[in-house]
Image (cartoon, rainbow, N blue to C red; front, side, top):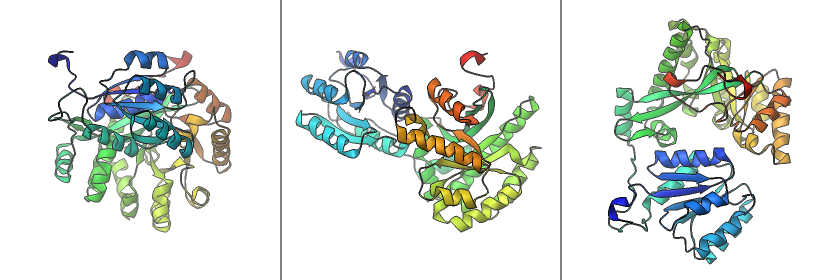
Length: 402
């Protein structure tokens, strides 16, 4: 390879039999300045393998040729890549695989126990960005990564660079678009898209989360007004930081924002995670109840991942229950995950709640939640987060295509 052909971005290869997982790991890597490729089988993986890779993300539970055999392959081929092991197996299996890889001379940078969050994945990429690139001289080989400061974020908020993206929510029965979840994205003119795991915590720690939330809500509601004028009937779900649940003026503020645009309060649903509620439940219940009295919808998000789900469901004025994607991902393979999904749908319906499944990535998963009577779904099978200009209001998928 000539000097001109050396890649300008560090290369990462991902192997996982779940397409959604591959795309997630690749998307985060792309956002952080890596050149990512992914495969869902060993044949493609071996074709893309090279000794110039910066990192390899390896799922241990691969069909045909499992992760342990692939570790043997990497050792035999003198891989210098930093290896990241991924698995839903228990931590003892992961640690055994780590020791085996290291015994074969491989560099194990980290392990990701599924389901993992974006912060854990980003931290792994941070390590990969800092290590020496084996294909380039050590005096300039590390990949640069934009590390936003409070000053950067404050300027971005003032310039309107933090914008709403919309992930479609679909009717499980008809596949029709029934609404969207609003997600914050920072579109920087110099650094491209910056994912929320890199600036939400910064906004919280630097006292900017209210400004960020208000800006996203205003722009999302402005878009709802545009859609309504076009004859569409949007319903949007908004995520709140735990810190926002201390704002006593929030219920009236949201109502004013909605009414100012000629919309109805039930246009919006506020999504609250179990973790956020657990921090100061009585104070949160005050604000949530007043929101519900103003006919704003309330959803308990990531259901099943917290520690006091049943108490919160019993006492909170919720209208919707969202089943966490980690259970949907494994429901067709693991009896325990299947049982959690089934019981969550049944519990939600017994309590009079609409049930939404997150992370639907395959037709089989969609068929499964449809049989259970789940009303709505989100996930890459049906639609990715996108800008309002390309939001897919048309019916998608199966025999319901355009």
